[in-house]
Length: 478
Image (cartoon, one colour):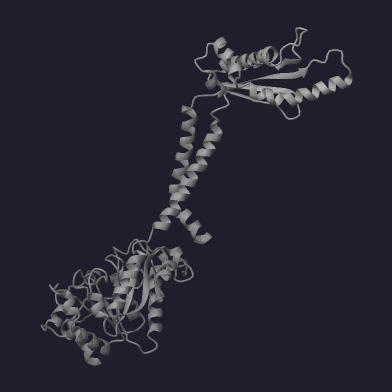
């Protein structure tokens, strides 16, 4: 992934990251509140060698010797010979070995000082243990390790330079440190989950995702609009909106695709239902008709027809009646208002849609309409669900695959293309639908406009009354 993609992932999952960070802070604060406070108290001893009335050289040698033996004495402090008397004296419910874990001893570099630190949940007990360990250590050194040499005095002298005092505040838990650590851990977990979700998410979210799956031309990027379900005829109801411009851009790309004199018949399908194929079919047909082209729109989804509902027309008689020989094209082809769009509804839902759509009669219908119209747009069923789209596109018709951003998965798009390729269908391109406006920057019209479109008076819709007479007259003029 590129840095920009990581930034996008973090922006999309900022709520998750914030929640994880808050939980981390709460965990750090909770741990601090529940943890047992730990207090520390320190005593300090000075180690010297008795030099009596010796010369200056003797005193220097004694000082050097003191610094040399200090490190050995530090290791003695945590041994049982020093700690067992402390346990007995203070009546601690600990063994000498257990007490050693609460004691630390160290000597600053190049000094004859020994620092003894004791920790305990009780500040008073911490001070008592530190002082008791210091006294026990002095006793062990002077009576056992370095006993007197005959004059009643040990050659090593230990002096307490700092008495352990009762601490006023605990050294742990460190509330601010725990909260900061909790924040960092929560933030890391949130970011990790966000990146993992993105890595495991196989859905298509942008135009780049489509380009990673297929090298088929990307003919259009249709911007998402929350009002599409209520008003699917975007070209009619919102002619100046960015999404309407998206369909016009698709129209332009389709016209360039047809410059070489290839087939003007286009089948629009998708991998799964609900990915915008019918909306794309209707609005593309309207956009082509708006540009002056004569367009025939065929509702070939004989399982779940939607186009008739979108156009607000009756579709009881239509394509199925032609395919079974009960009607002619001119009998059921209807002109939509005063536009150059002619519509062939699905008709009654048959029990064998695939057989009808793959029949010779279907090829005749398409050929007849192709001869009479500039463009023939066919709304086909989803390619993964059934084989209808494949059998329609088996001839010279070009297939456009509608891919829904945030819904269609990459393996589904790959399977759709593979299925159509195996059926020898001619997939001419891909149309991305329901795209966030920012994802089509530089491609579509997400940030493009002519001012406040809300103040533009949209043209009044044409009379949408449909008559078969208009359709018949139009065909007879050819």
